[in-house]
Length: 431
Image (cartoon, rainbow, N blue to C red):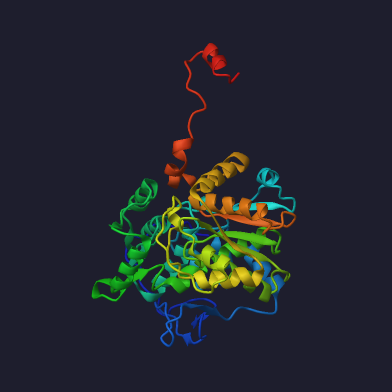
């Protein structure tokens, strides 16, 4: 593969947009199809749109070999994504193919006997899974000839958009709640794009971005998680692809996914279903579990109450990357959890911190608060009997703990402070 350099000019659209195997946008409610474009809602029923494909069929072994021969990033799955065949020749951050860690020490702590893995997406370029979704959105923006990349973000997405925009030659202007963790603010700002804090919650930020899209000011803008959302969401499928490939092309019994908007969970399920239909994995039952923080748990509350409608809440949790009080994909998360025999559970802030520390001291993985939610919920699911510890389970860590130091700093520090002498070391009880 040719060495890539950062592009400084605004990307020009291709002569003919190339979305690979993608053929249309399909409404998730009424099924009506819409031509591929920078739109996210069905014109007939206002339901959300997602990408529909015509995949290659009839030769699963050939497709599997083609994937395995690809680059060590998400572009190995280009035949299953809405991107051109020459996507690797374009400047991009090339995220993905992160480690699937066999978590034996964590399994022993939790009493898991069927095998436990952590899919550690902190190894992505900006240290969160958001690099996956942004990479797909960048290719869509190129196809549509857009000039500015934008988003509403709880932090990780802002950094991913800022970095990807620089790499691909776009201007960026991203919007965040004004009170995010300092680490995420700095990481989003360091790339040199415009970073705008909005006084309010993430849901206020998202509403503002929706207004901006309809204004002449927003002409030529690609909002990765709004008007480019159908393409953006497809990046999360690559988590499912990688997990199954790294397990030897097979499905795990259980997957635990943190919930913010809910898109990641729904697209992981979509990816698993695609692998089954293409014959890349053998079909078998699997369960998908959603994980929320108690201070922002509208999907968990709806699941436990047996409701189909998710009632919005005002977030109040240290897990700010999951603090979306009105999750767009909440109802679809409920459907998937129930269809697969999984569940949606929540943990409080104290349990979130405990989850971060448990993963760190057992597996050497320092997760951000969303990862603490996932591990905390995994522990709770086992303790309450909702997850069978004799089955194989994959828990997803979506980001790096260096982004959310404030969560653990008050209870984490030096074991002792001593004088530079052996006597002082012995006095501290460390010898």
